[in-house]
Image (spheres, rainbow, N blue to C red):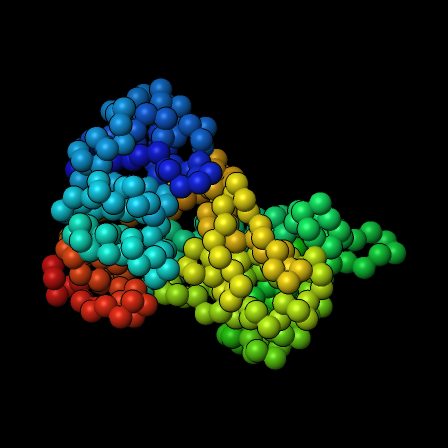
Length: 370
């Protein structure tokens, strides 16, 4: 199979879908790999490394798109890339379709076989290709939140951990999944007062056992959330419904009740966000202030640390990509439920229930089509 990888064009996105080691793995199993020149530069991978690994370097992204059978990316294609879709193309990347109707329409019109990292799910319920970026985003959310609490960025002007004789910052984490747990880990490590909220009592028990007296766990209800965010200095939104639109747990009505200069980091923004006041921002212009609360809503947070992010991501995506390349997507789906669950669109049809529900489109069972 011809495998393609192009330079990401999203604002300040420096990750890349394939590393030279990944190329070597595809080539050693008999596949041809086409890489756009400069694709890996932002993550510290030189063209020469890709050539040594066996890749063919291509000058123009459009030529990679047209020649490849499977495109391996990091972020969803942008509007200027929609015209490069072709019938039968396998697109293997993050998609987040439930928050992006134009992209969904373009994939359906192009009859692209779209495999989304974020909806691939193993039998144990884990999300193997989403987990590494969730780990990074969770840890980064505290790092960014601490920075935007600084006065020059519009924050309160407080230090997350405080110092002896001063109060520590109050951190509230909405959602106890991978993002939330990693946010908790860093916030606790920095010495903040941490409260984590989740709807799942079993998960709260696990977090309580993991962090002990260092965190306060609470059941997710509107009244509990309103009460804890009122005193919060930093709120992390880390709610996830795989493939679906994120519920708006952080209400606009909370903003006037919050501290002036408090910070809200909406990690869920790539799925539509869990804040009613959220809208997507970029690394170039990452924050906005509404009713005195600083909102950080960057849609590709891990792109800020591309070297770490690329290696972590491709460690997870490679083995599934190799299965698709070796067997073809259809056989790979028959052999792997995880890969099958990743297919959001196929031959002009929506094959993910949450995406179909988000836009009122017809859902078609993939296995009925293949």
